Image (cartoon, rainbow, N blue to C red; front, side):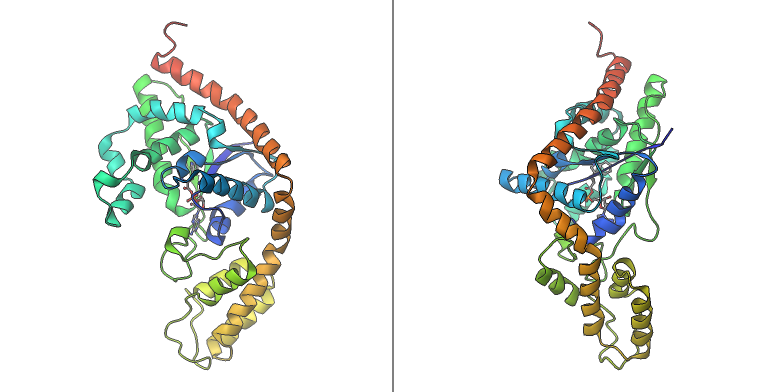
Length: 334
Ligand code: TYM
């Protein structure tokens, strides 16, 4: 029997970036062939930040199209929208009782928000409770592994804690503990500022499906080696984000090796290295960009994919929720 895998993505923006792709989406797509896979768009999670309904709809559609264009195959995996499966929200209500307020206060999403200067008074409860909903997303399907980027590790640990606490309370084995599947190499793709994690809210991304001119602008503005002032200065390749992006995106490995050699020697300028990266980006994602445009004209098909995905996801979700209600005593009058 194939092992079960589950993962999600929050439509807090309307497009994925290469950090999402290499850190999570590409590994997830690879797992389709060897595992039983469940992937979903976590639209309820997006409500923590998106309070404009038109924007939310646009974001959901955008992320769904991105995923399908990048190779998610609905004939191999179950692909659905979180809000179509009401059991996610229902299980979250139950699970909140097996984790303490103190532990929730230590979660990064909440702490990071406080650090930006937001007051406790202003932080919405959706953000505070977010990791509980995420634990429900996961535990509902009893998956073996969760392929995600490094920034999600703490959330998976919390899901494990909740699962353990629930199992212990009722002396059951209801929830198997999910394993984080996080790559050491690509679990945290650095942004074009060369410092922080690539993230839309930090404005340090390279898009995938944006207009070519915008992608060129994002790449040309990327941080390289700050100690190198002229093209004839020997440059540093290790830790230089432009070369990390070349390693990830440029399928012409000979060109990458040659550029690295010339960079170290001081015989190639930053501009040429970056222009070659723009070309490599267009080559790597060209077919996906075409496919996305084609899919965007077949929205009926896309809706059908999501509706079939939700039906399959619900079959499993219902069974787990019934088991949980039974365990805690909510089925008393049945
Ligand atoms: P989200 O939408 O922020 O990100 C989607 C996926 O992309 C990964 N990622 C990165 N990986 C490497 N380098 C980066 N710079 C980078 N930026 C983002 C994320 O780690 C993630 O895997 N809470 C989740 C969505 C979610 C979920 C779930 C995931 C909701 N429920 C249940 C797994 C299981 C999130 O906001 O990811």
